[in-house]
Length: 40
Length: 452
Image 1 (spheres, rainbow over the protein chains, first blue to last red):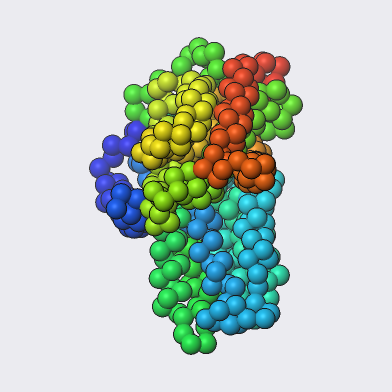
Image 2: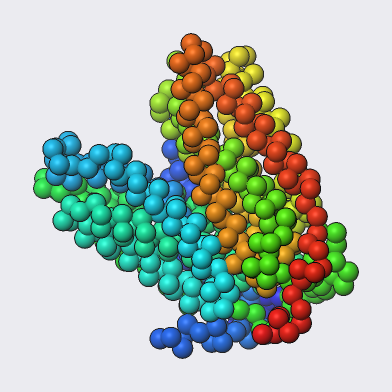
């Protein structure tokens, strides 16, 4: 009845979150850099 | 292959880490969120023949506008039609079909662009890709709610945040690929479509093969399901067809439709509005930055408000959307008259965060009212409210602005009446939310229906 504490999934968790997190972060940084033009 | 996609094959072991499910959902939503960035192809597609400028025979923007419109229409239709099938076959098969449709739609469009046949692009991205959008959008929702019974708002908010974030990735990726493939004889649209179709299909496969369903009886550690239903949180289930016979479904349909109408109307006009309300003070470059900032708040709001709804309740969250929205829309004309750009920006950033929040909080609201069993299917049918709002919002803003200008109102004040109309729509939304009650028990599924 684990809610997500199983240690054997740690590696998969890291890979999974990096897989979706890196492209999302790249997109957010690109958009954020564009948004900064508002303050120039 | 069929066996690999079966619902029975994806039942997770009891120690499965539920935090693997949000990335699976994000892998789908980050891809289909590309739809918000489709406009980056519009201008290059008007120069497929002329390359440097439009030539006779090149497509016009009005023809190209139908691609996105078709995609959104088929998003709504497919989400409404495929919801029950999704609940029967499970999320993996639905996600796989969504990936085939979305990736395949791009491939067909690539062929259409290469032979300059717009009907193939209507069929590819508009119809088939649109079905991929609809099925992909609803496919992880009920699965997330089953894995996170303690925080359904946060879980679905995370996935639907991905839909908002998809454009952030797609926009620079599309520009990069078109630049890489462009030459003296091509603007690079066809190979860009092809590569994006392959990339998105592969990315979505990660979601397909990561998603799992919880084992029957599984609960998160330490979670105790409420024994007594709360006023607006049921422990029963309502069949998708029965849900459509309840007033609650239509009240929620209007709640979503009016919240989205108000947001979508200003989202498309934000750049022009900021420049016209503050002539000479907001440059086109700054306006572009403002639009980018709004996109970030649209995405962030999806996670923030849906997560907050787990603590303050879904109904109260929508009360905040409507009351704060009424206040902010009424304040916008004042920001123009006092010339406060920063107050204008703050108003719209909060408004747009609540627009995103409206999308992401609705699945958990549906779960509260209709139960978990058919929430994906009911959500799919409710998304027709989005299609309707996609028509209402821009029409209201555009036509009222034109009417005001034709009546001699200065451009800087042309949006004032529109803002008050939006506030009025939110008053109606507030009333719909106010009249929400629990579904009558005669609509609840009986035991034999649940096990069938």
